[in-house]
Amino acid sequence: MPLPKLKRVLLKLSGEVLMGDQQFGIDPSFVSELAKEVKAAKETGLEICLVIGGGNIFRGMAGAAQGMDRAQADYMGMLATVMNALAMQSALEQLGVPTRVQSAIQMDQVCEPVIRRRAERHLEKGRVVIFAAGVGAPYFTTDSGAALRAAEMRCDALLKGTSVDGVYNCDPKKDPEAKRFETVGYSKVLADNLKVMDASAVALCRDNGIPIVVFSIREKGNLARVLQGKGVQTIVQE
Ligand code: UDP
Image (tube, rainbow, N blue to C red):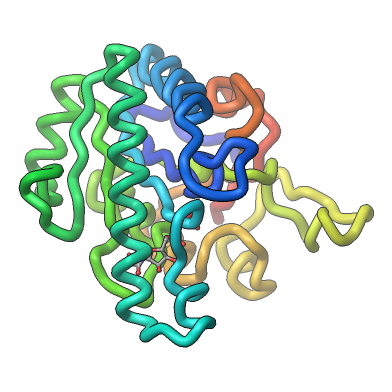
């Protein structure tokens, strides 16, 4: 089934895409390239909510694996997503795109708290709203944060821009025979544990009928192609 006509989308970017070719952190020139893609998408008249992960800086699981308290490490991960959100805000505003960052962990000197009605108003005024700090609770990921914000902002689709160009039946890096799905159902993703987003995020999208579009954001122009239905992608829906 093709995607519905998109008026408002939530774009989720993995933190690792902000690294560019680095091994860690933020590559401002690559963030600027990403911002150009977002700007081009916005110029088609789309309303855009953004969620950015934090994996390029810190993941709670990695901290826990080294002996840290998991919840504490997760809070550090959430703070990493705020740094990424600010980097993207800066890149977008340098291109003249008005933005607001709303964080699920309140930090008044830095950005707004998440207030749905205020976010609505920002979108109406043509601003890109960047939601930071995931759902604001440990033991979650920014995928869940993205699904939650997509649901509450009534987005027509959740676009997951990552390093791979879709969902495969097995790991394409390990198996040359791996096949990419054009479309796949939420239930199959959950039953076969396919690597799309974490299960709670997929379930939230399923329960709210939000299609998930998985595509590579590393290729220039791909976001625009995906929005025109001409990109290499996998659509997860029922
Ligand atoms: N995180 C969290 N709760 C949330 C969102 C994120 O605890 O609602 C923490 C968690 O430790 C996670 C880290 O923030 O590992 C970075 O987010 P994520 O791993 O989702 O980033 P991505 O893989 O998309 O770069």
